[in-house]
Image 1 (cartoon, one colour):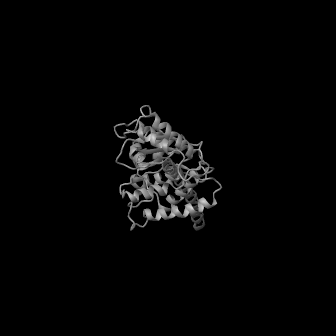
Image 2 (image 1 turned 120 degrees about the vertical axis):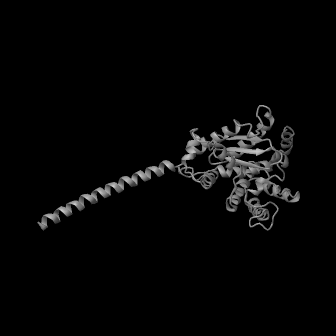
Image 3 (image 1 turned 90 degrees about the vertical axis):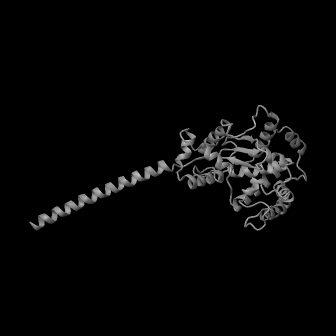
Length: 305
């Protein structure tokens, strides 16, 4: 009798163990499936589609975003699209995205930014503050870095702007990457939030300095512009004591003209000066002291409202 009870107990324990393993495996697979649905991997194609959707959000909401209509300002857009084409043509992802430019009519804001997927926005205030073509191209090239992908062969290697946007959405909204898929598919109400995040993203000093290096090399070769447009912009901001320079303040996050900040403009300027010495001494490209076509830039400025 005791042997029979022992065998029965053993058989019961074996069946229970098998059931427990099966249940655990099923639960784990469900949990994994739930996580993959909540946090799907985003690809470069998703970046392009997201950028297209956010760009449409801006263009289709004139009450929220005062965008200069291209049909009313063709000379402005012809000029800026050509400049953006020159920049994007030197990137690693020139054919991956739909590259577009839009101009925000706001003379009180000195701002430029990129959306995922090759979209570049700039305010009329910043366009009017700049005076030379190499300065504009320097900002565009710097922003193009945030769109470029370090490893374009890896499906989960995203651009810096996409990585930063993911962090921003997670911190503010507490949602997974599924929200990006929902925006792409037109089933989310987060479009406006994401547009706002993109317009106000800031980047850490290491990222900013890398983008500066990227920009200086880009406009010097093959276009032979003076590569120091970024330093010229910082010097101009310092000389005119422009504390409300949004683009400079967000790259890296600091208070402009505040030398007491951990990452002040003085530190960024020193980094640019060190790059200048190395770049001009080692580059095989020829260099012009002034930008090649500042007159054309000034002609474009005269077309702004």
